[in-house]
Length: 214
Image (cartoon, rainbow, N blue to C red; front, side, top):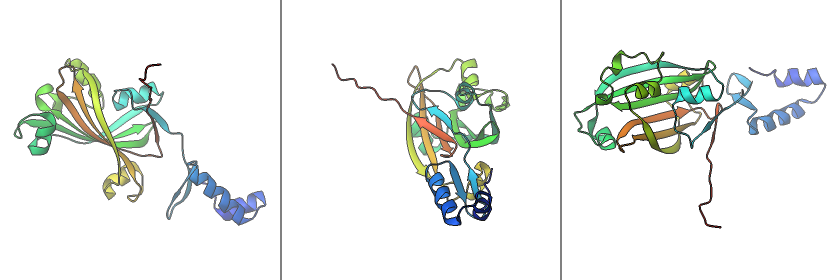
């Protein structure tokens, strides 16, 4: 939701425009307002908090936070692993992977863009499954695949114009890039994903504890 212009706010509350501008600048720095070039200043909605210590898919995480999750699949196909992903999954370059690219929504608002790679041999009829009905974690559970740990890295990047528009952001706006490699109880790589997440829609927490003996 956009806020009124500086002139409108100054007139409404009987204050100087400079006072309005200073107040708006403070609220932008505090993350409560967001300036979009050429469009105006908007109120930032509540952020979705995610715990990075917990291993779980988008749908499960959003439900636990009391939000309504939904996804829009952009690409769902089979491709060869190639040299790069063969190294990640410890498979042959000619082996096949499922590749999924999708937009994730929380309460109808686009939150992130995901790219997911899964070895085709794990889920024989994956291409027939409707990802609008079943979450990927539900599909894993159905096939007896249990993720037990994951390694995750964080970086900042920008998106191509088309993908930025899909997330409702300016292409110059940085997004958080999470690269995640997930393993099962046999220490096999089950999934590799990249998640491009809007920083204005999510908060992430990590918990630390000292292992030093008292």
